[in-house]
Picture: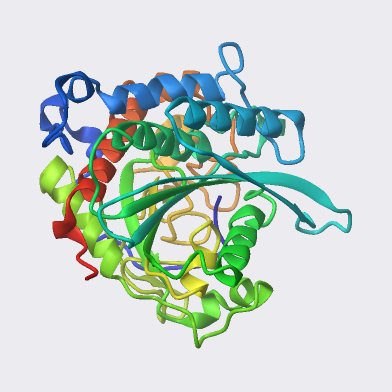
Length: 393
């Protein structure tokens, strides 16, 4: 998933609310069930997402790591296809070729696309990448990005049975970790074939659990942060959108479902070492699958779990996800950084590390990953089944 190196001297994160991981189970509302039949309404799709996370990321009960260009990436794609087809969707498989970042050879992967028809021709896209990285460290990609994949699968399962005010298109993409390749290919092809004409917004689900807080971002207001991604697929600043309208919609849905204290957060502005604003409050860069959609002029919301309160290796940039002492050589709570910034090697990172697997995450944060996963699924179902959050008429 993550990011370019950025630096900040900003010392205190301004958040909309406290982390969803601190809520009790009683704080989670049952959502998106108005008009449901009782058999559908009785299913907890947040818990189903956790069951699916085991199937995708547990190396003994499921697939495990899904390194790009490997057989297990293919197995993950097959799992996605079978789940969606089993829910009754007509699954489109989109093969693509690409050059992995820093390499000359051609590699191959697939995107998997389904669509739930709504009451209008307006469409909201949800995307998540199913490949992982960090197998050399012991990572199994539970948070990055098994969490996004199983969220989409559980949401797709639920809304297949209920009315939605919009079409909802699920795009599960390959080959993100070595160049955001699957989503860029999808956007370029869909734009050329008119399949983005009615798309009004996009949600990227990448690492939605594991970190200390859950955030929602919009695209950077400075096009230069997306320029390379946009030009790679034929777009420019003329098409680019940094509109935060959908970030605000997702945030409001999270408030309504989880309450003010449990809602998603907005990260504070990130400053350079010279004190200039590098990333304005609530804005993100082009390092994940939202990039191509912003380039095509579509308002995006990017959901991730991390911790912008930490003064990490490159500042308050969200690259350090947790203060848990096991994820640091030594963490100083008073200064919110490493005890020794010169010798620190871990920096509170989960993604791509030995901590990104269910067994380790449960050991470090009992109950957290299931709670955050469930919260995310319920928020998205609320958002997608209620027109009040984003009226694009």
